[in-house]
Length: 425
Image (cartoon, rainbow, N blue to C red; front, side, top):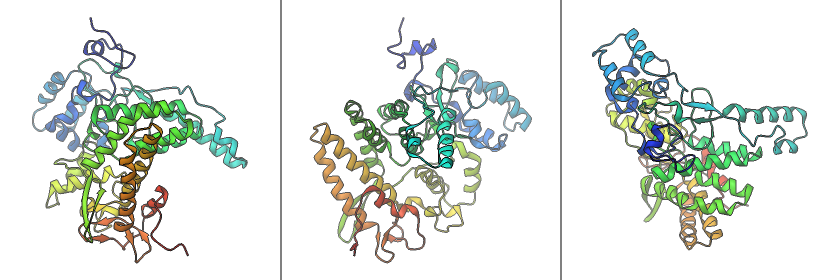
């Protein structure tokens, strides 16, 4: 009889005995029939039995795939709303069935950052914010899902922070800000556990997806894992943890350089820059009916779906930054845009990786040192708007930086430590 290797790593028999949980390893789990069966997904989502398209794709089946599909096929080609509701009630658990609220073991009522506050109102507000950690910490529990049942969750070994509301899983770049807050609250163990979840995901999938759902595995979000480790290391000085993470951090960086980059020829110079880029032929499962209906009046549905899902990878979703007509989402064109903030994040990542490899006495520090110099030059050559004396997104279609609107993201090079190409006087 096969046994559990440790508390979180499972063999097939171990998982069938439900004595431990798998995490992040989608290869060890069946692809969720919710997103794998196009006919089922289309009929359920277009029926609008739920007001929110995300509801259905977050539900866990009560039975194995064959049983659920068989029951669905009995409905025929045009089931009524009542028949669909009955099918869902009989074959699926409510949203959140595979989710549990956990108690953080490093939460302090008197968080360290509160000691820096003197104003009574700020102290009360800070205490209120600090109490939210206990309300937003969760974990997926594989043992709540039957052996043959399916879920879209990417299970993790440690707890995580959720945004709240309809979002009951963790998200990539949201988590960076959570890490900053957790560290300010003295919750270093929780922060470390969350980063370990992300490292596990990279080891399995080669990158960090948009969030901890299978339907997010075709896109990412602003690549801030390296900055999470930077924040944690700055707070703790944990060199061993740095050593344990470094290979996965290199993997995450290379994923973006290999899959989300473009060579731009500008003024006879070539610059390798990063952009958001996802190819899709279908609506997003979690926003299926909305995407499907909006695409009907679009001349190129594949282009529309690809631009929509690429926008979600940006973390800004449907900002006017990505629209040719700022009032019409159907004119979305993010695939034509090289974002200045993404490249500023990559500059920070290269700076951090240079430092990390230097601390670990790795020869690869030289690789990142050269990358820093190239990126710094590229940011000021490609994204600088001489007319407005600031940076901005580069539009490939118009072959230049847009001057129509100003966004807070235009100043992201300052945040990342890039020196502006202007005379300070």
